[in-house]
Structure formats: structure tokens, C-alpha cells
Length: 363
Image 1 (cartoon, rainbow, N blue to C red):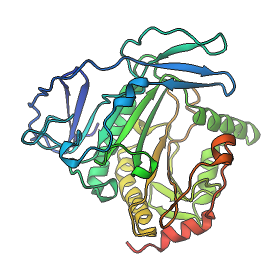
Image 2 (image 1 turned 90 degrees about the vertical axis):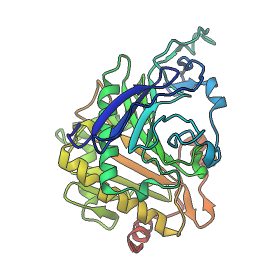
Image 3 (image 1 turned 30 degrees about the horizontal axis):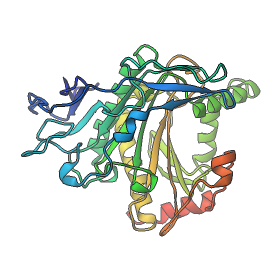
Image 4 (image 1 turned 90 degrees about the horizontal axis):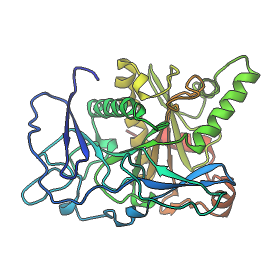
């Protein structure tokens, strides 16, 4: 953590942890949470899928989570008048807190019985956190200042390091879902962090590809090769000294942008101060170009691909994958038969066309 951020740790009424990341040392963080809350739920249940060699989380307690409340009842807004949500302060810069409805938790799991020998069970241990990017309810990540994005990066890096050190955590995933079109249940600008008790299927597959590439090419890194192939090409959308954003030649989604640091690092915690500061200008340009393509707020998933905690860190290469399901004004790409059932994506927009449309947006 750099000296520009003041980090304050407190707890909510039910014992969940909350952390303020303030851009000054003058904020008053003495307020407490006086709500009457039930105890947090225990860990979810993991069921093994022997057909795909994957774990599926069953978290039935999440059915009751908050769903698109009015602004006056937003749980991510600061405390004001009679309103009491998840953040007891009257204002904040960036806040991280344990999710009230977690998919993974360090708390004891309820007893359960495996459905069969083929489908063993294990507790869904881990942790899920919410990251609030701003106290302004009607804002968005694209409207943040580069300085605020830097604070968010510091929070991501802090949580990546701390969650990676928890017993049983194998991978940390920082992400943002934006837009009701992709399932957002709260309008307030926020993201999430999952600390998984296993290495995720997508990461395992990418690292297997990276391992095969290294064996064929004298140890060369696959992700670095992808970046080098794109850096001077027609699919670049934005770049600076430390980062390049491009539409990959193999994009699955109508609008998909990958953002790579120019130096191979395993995770956010490994970024230098200069790299952390340089991320915001490039990423904000990408988001604003996305919103400008059709003149409406683009729904998206923004996902940090980080190395596993304990394995294959030498093969991994931190990067951000951002994609939108919007393919045209008023039209969304849905995962239909080929994508949902077989995992074979069919893209309606040529990657080169998508990159050109993004570059043509007047900022």
C-alpha cells in the first residue's frame, strides 16, 4: 500500500469485515453499524462434476439477496438520515466489505451428504467481498477520475495479497458486472472479489495452453506472445507506456477488449507504482469508447485474470478481460445452443470491425 492511501479496518453489526481506502488521512471512520442483523451464512456446498472435472457451488442462501432496490434503499450508499446500509460512514472514497450473501465463506458449513460416490461434496470455503468504487449512487467506473481508479487498484492489490494468504484459498478473482442486461442486482457502482478454494476451470485451461506453448517454444510465455502480436496491429484500442488495450483476434463477444501490462506479473499485488498509476488512463479510455459506440451505457463484465496462489505462477500473466453482450443498438447476444451447450462461440461482429468502431468514438 502506498503512502497516499489511508486504510481503516472495522466490522459491521454481524461481524463481517469492512475496510475503508481513503485518499486523505482526515476522514472520520469512528461511526459504527447499529443495525440488527442475523449472523452471516455458513459456507456454501461444492459438488464435483465428474464429466467436466469441475466444482459447482450450491449457495441456496443467496436466493434472498437484495435485488434492484430503489436509490433510497441502496445498501451501498453512505449512511444518511434514517438510511442505514452496509457502509456506516456519511461519505467514502473506496470501501471493501464481506458480502452479506457470499458464494464462498470461511464460516462453518452446514452438514450435508454426498449425492453419490461420483459426486463428492466439500465446503465452499473462501471469501466474497464487495468493492464500492464511489459513494455517488448515479456514477459509474467510466466517470471516475484517474486518481480514483488508482485507489481502486490499490484496494484490489491489497485484497489480492490478503486473500491469497488465507488458508485454503487457491485463486483470487477481482471483477465488475455492469448493467441489468448481464444480471446486476444493484445499480450503485461496485465490483466484487471472489477467493476460490480451487483454481477455476478457465484459468486451468489457459495455463495448460501456456504450458504447451512454453514446451514448444523454448520456454516462451504464451500471453506475452499474444500481446506482442497485437501491440502494433489494427485491433489496438488504447495504449500508454505500461499498458495496451486491444480487441483479441479470437474475440468471442461482439465487443471484447483485453488490457495487458507490458511486463509479465502474476497478479495485481505485483504491479509497480508506475504500472498502477498508468492503468487508469488506458482503462477509462476503453470504457468511454465502449459507451460511445452506440451512445448508451454498455453492459459489460470486466474480469481480472490473475495467477493461482500456489501453482503455475511462472506461466501466468496478469491481464484484464472485458466483454459486452451488446451487439447492436437494442440487441444483445445471448448464449444460445452452440455457446451454452457446447462452448462454441459464434461472434456476430468481426474483431477488426469492433476495434475500428471503438477507435472512431470521439472522446
